[in-house]
Length: 343
Image (cartoon, rainbow, N blue to C red; front, side, top):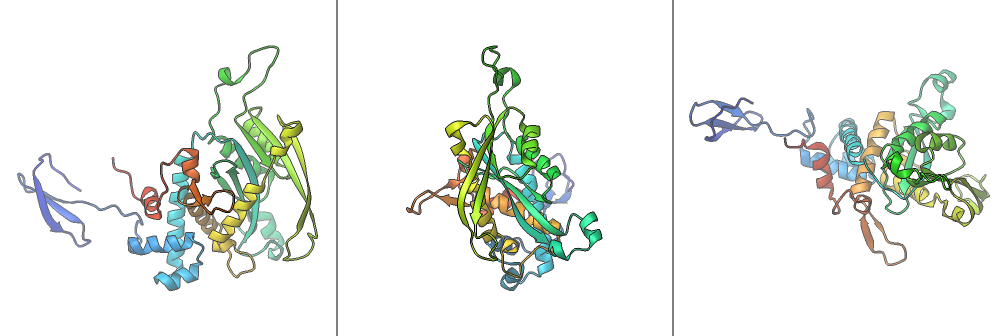
């Protein structure tokens, strides 16, 4: 676009791509006003792409969306990757400086390409993008906000990476404010409380990411009839252990039920996570993009229901956490994620 220093202009038709053109009334120069292209080089109409993404976030499969919208499945996968990557950047920018009271961590199993038992010996040793993959998630018990997620193998390295990423999104007090300088009662002001399952890598990861600025507890649930395939197991007991700053009756606050309920929500809204179906992810990049799309939709658009049988809805997780002022529509999320910001 070429502009002049004069202020008086008039519309001068359109170019071959239907972008409006402008002519200066003083010097006669003409230039094109480039319209924002949220989809880049993709030629899919914006409204059709928006409809397809909305259907995908509501739990429809790739091929069902292809039959409904007429967009080829390969184009849909490219659309998911573009929108999902933009959602991940959007969440990385917005999920900063958070104040959360109780974070619950869990890992959800899925697979990419084929299951772990069908991989060759070399693939098991060398490839991380096929076979069993875990979705590492966390949720705040009060606000239901999902501040971050990670997709990868169930390893100690990923546990440390995920915990460090979550810690970087929280507001830590300054050392001279948080540390109790009294020699009689030395201590630290906790930033949040963390509850995890019995995975052995979590204690080291929590200590590495948060140090003394956290209250941490582990809960191990005991089940009966857990060996029966495709049948719900019966929970017969729990064992809670306070690892740091949680003792006595306060151990009753150790809980992972909310993040386990989030696992069910994820399997409903992402068709590729549905069990006992033909749906699964063929590429790790597609899974990462699809889950980023779900995370943005869940935090800003999805309304959870209040406890009880009233059926009343409460604000979105972003509203409860104070980073959004109203319930976002999918159109608002689409515009905030893909359209460039004005200078």
